Length: 332
Image 1: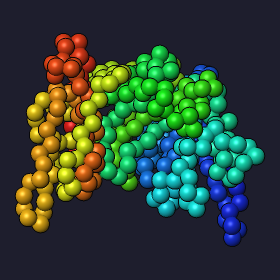
Image 2 (image 1 turned 60 degrees about the horizontal axis):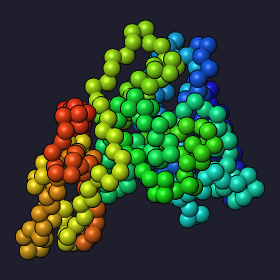
Image 3 (image 1 turned 180 degrees about the horizontal axis):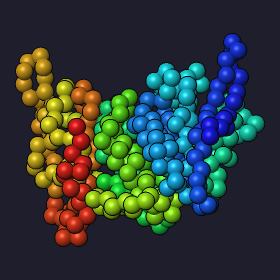
């Protein structure tokens, strides 16, 4: 059932809508919400929503509760391929929880939060920007670690990044929901303005796995366990690789792979003179979970992020057991 949660008049007789697809089945009381499209240039969530709706419609008898799918929280941004809300110069994920008596954007944010409030879980799907490609990961406020990390692991994500409370913006949808008792898990994958089918299907498989654990999904044949164990990163264990020169960044690596200390991650080259300006080396043994997708770089541009196994570059046996298999995460 398609429901309109926001309807606002626009200039010149047009209408602004935000809609959701409400899917119900069985006698279960659990409610899962999947939201995406907060940033108009992040498109991976569109395929995730499509696949979720398609599979649930095909196996309607397996649903035991309610799944609500919100494909576009910022439909004007998606229509115009803009990150923020067009004409308002606003990042929508910086105005939550909104204001029922505020501007159109603030009223919209307020209505979204009120509509999601009380769900057993909200999964907020994001992509990276145009410049970086991310392996499927969750980003969690340390204050929500105990509640959300088990859920992120159940999704089978490659990487779970726990951030200090001071680095988490309070005006995001996730913070607004988590701080008022509605659990919200932020998932990030892929690259801006593109859709990586393999990553999206992996996330969809993880969502159904989590739904099965919640007794929200009862397929005729139980889903097999996922073949990925999540790396959980807390504290200062992420190495940021920034460009030492301006030029074109060339790399053969994809995100979601293991790298060794001293291994070449890529090269910054000068096309005019045909020479290499800088060789980018991994500073440690670790897991490459972010890689530059847009090849033009300036001095200081972020090219990669690596989770460092240990300070001396040697992973413990326990950490090695938790690394995703390269065959599962080496994306094209």
